[in-house]
Length: 319
Ligand code: NAD
Image (cartoon, rainbow, N blue to C red; front, side):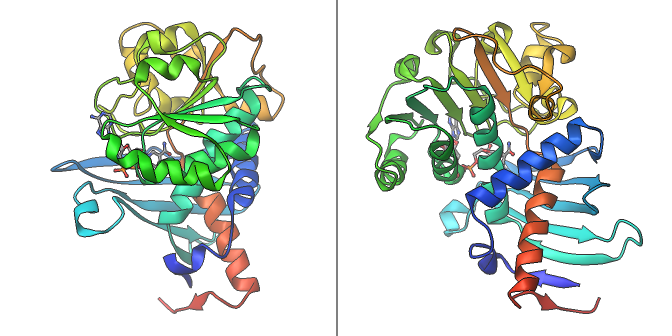
């Protein structure tokens, strides 16, 4: 079994690698060549969430699981709130082939999913990026989004405004003007990324202008919610995996309220594979419900392992 520790992952793949791996995975899912298994997600109390995301990509020869979760007390200890590890197995024999640190991989694959949705669904001329949330994932989201559209400005809101300065430094690195705004000003954004752990809608229907693309990335568990369900009712809704979108994703609330049905939700992989239409007009609101699927984790872990082997960085252990 090969071990790729968390601190080796950074040098092994970048945003472009994650984008390519996740895009190919979403298309393989839409073509029925790869499938995600049911998510296990358990509340441990005090806001801690722990679970497993797994799947099989038959064509790509990848079988595996990501184990981990969200531990909100970590920040106070100087540790990232998300902790996870990816395990890969030989699909023919079930032998464990690799164990890979999942922290950076999670951030890269989540940001890649949002960027793929922006690339495929946002208006080509979208110039103002709105960020809702300024936690650990937000910086990755901002960097990935900036790769797919030539934004001229970033506006951002966070419940705790003190965290916006760090996001502003990322915007500065990217050469983008940055302004902290009230949620009402999100109407100026042509693309909005939401990446919070909020339990109730912060972004309201009145905060979203026609023609906007939203990538709602924070809701990955039953009970979380970032946006008012009325937004989903007037949007065309896309997702990574419909089964997850309606149970643990942002769409859980709009479906429960009877505002949309599961059949109204299109996998973004179908757009990538040419099996479904993307944006239909300049005034249409498109919304990507990014719930995070196991196959995303396996795809980026596979890239990390292959690169680590090629560079002699993988540690071999016998189990
Ligand atoms: P973090 O703890 O570093 O940051 C949390 C963010 O949520 C901060 O911006 C905070 O201000 C905001 N927030 C917390 N409570 C809020 C509330 N009540 N109202 C509004 N905002 C609130 O977390 P992170 O690592 O940046 O992750 C953010 C979210 O993204 C989490 O919910 C996490 O589970 C989710 N996530 C999703 C995926 C996916 O694939 N969809 C992947 C990774 C993380």
